[in-house]
Image (cartoon, rainbow, N blue to C red; front, side, top):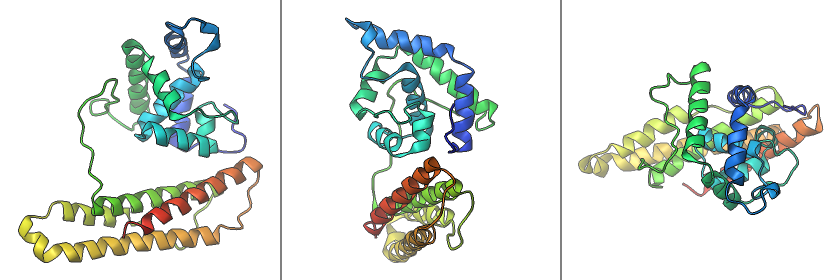
Length: 258
């Protein structure tokens, strides 16, 4: 892949290399996308087989829905690189949905097996617990209660700051990872009994709110201290700016959670 001076995060780079070494799946995806089309030479929704494969893998690795997948690819130069879009337009989320739905169960199983194999070889999973769904199944999705929204704010802001540090090649003083503390408080609130809520809930919420406010405040401090950071290439500068915009966005969302 052409790196253009911007590095993928290590996990995505390893997966990308693994997919490059298993290119035969592209032929199967190509057949699926053209299946049933009156004019097969026109493609499907402008998505190439390579884009379909890498976008689907990215969706499953990151556990994003279709809308977030589309937005993340469109806004992130490294994800454009990973999914083979580069400077080309990224279609709407409906196009991804239609393309993914055209893949046969056999093709999806091959993709699933490739992702599992890659995860095992990278020692991310042992292959027994990893599940990359090929069909819709019932699963646990937390309801957006106040405590989980606060936890999500801390988690996502921290993740975005980490990506910014990676893009500029160094850490910036003044930011502390509070995800463990936020997770602990969130879990304590969720596990409370009815009687415990009467005496402890307010205190626990105040603690979680304080952690979220600290994370958001520290992230805004990082934005100030990286405002004039110079990148070595135009591509790197675009990546840094994209991560800064992402942090600002989630800081604003975090402000609305307390």
